[in-house]
Length: 414
Ligand SMILES: NC(=O)c1ccc[n+]([C@@H]2O[C@H](COP(=O)([O-])OP(=O)(O)OC[C@H]3O[C@@H](n4cnc5c(N)ncnc54)[C@H](OP(=O)(O)O)[C@@H]3O)[C@@H](O)[C@H]2O)c1
Image (cartoon, rainbow, N blue to C red; front, side, top):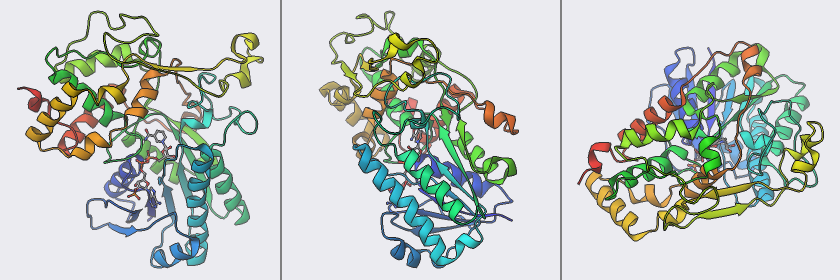
């Protein structure tokens, strides 16, 4: 019967992995780790308060009574500087693996599952080749900035090799995750739910799409945190999945032109008849826009010559455009007043507003390029998981309401 350690157990990906391990009868013991919050108590679960930024020596002490044959490494620390992100997140993984050697747990380890994401393909740097495949070129060396996913994957593969591959690893690449967490670094559903609920409660009840027209009409994938958790459990036990990375998305390709009206309907908001009155590079009515040209070349330039589009993309940079800068929107007096009214009526935590990841929302809705990945690799090994993206959003909003993170739709009326 397999047993597990989950690091980052209270984050958006880790929390779902813990829930699925607890529900799956074959997993008999789950040790969760994080620094601040704790998962809900459960007879199968033991929580350890551990700082993965501490030395391997300190962690050895913390981990001395912990044993497991699978590790789900979902811990993550955001840093604005990419070199710092690589240093910090690389060290957390490296020191943790070293501590497992000191405690002897490594002798029983069968597989370590590491959660990464689509930064694997440089989607944070601009337009990548579409759809993205696991075999795509890694963006390493000049002109590409450090990437903590590559740092972690090198650490992981080297560590397994050093142990004569007695244990194996799997890396997952989820797209923008739809899930539940409190005060984490990247939370699309919470920021979107706050934007939609406050917009619906304002006097005109309008729900303008804050991002770019290109994105509204473009195509993307998303990843349900629950589906991703199912994937992690499958990949842990699937013999053929070892020592490789996998894209993990819902299995449908969706578009905001389809999702946004459903979001408006859920919150009882109105779709403006002319969603983009200024076109694709202006602001919406009197709102402040945000327009950023990304500093690095587009990842697609790695493929530009091969696909016969050399001059079209070389030297070009991708753009993020929000016709409503949600960071500034969240500070507008009428918006803050409405949030405070709803917060008090629904008994919500002020932290939800203060920690809402508006910058992340800006990036995801403002991208002027699509983000579509291939799921063929996992499917060829037998993975059949699927989740309808709107259903994932709808269920997640409901869960965030149950957790007291988002207001209920009934609480938005005066
Ligand atoms: N969120 C998304 O939409 C998204 C999309 C694609 C890929 N990803 C990737 O998924 C991976 C996991 O990120 P996530 O979004 O699930 O993270 P998250 O929601 O921000 O959660 C991070 C987790 O790590 C724990 N943690 C942070 N620093 C720690 C430390 N020093 N010691 C121990 N625990 C620590 C946090 O708990 P404490 O703070 O309490 O310690 C928390 O449980 C990352 O590689 C991320 O880039 C995320």
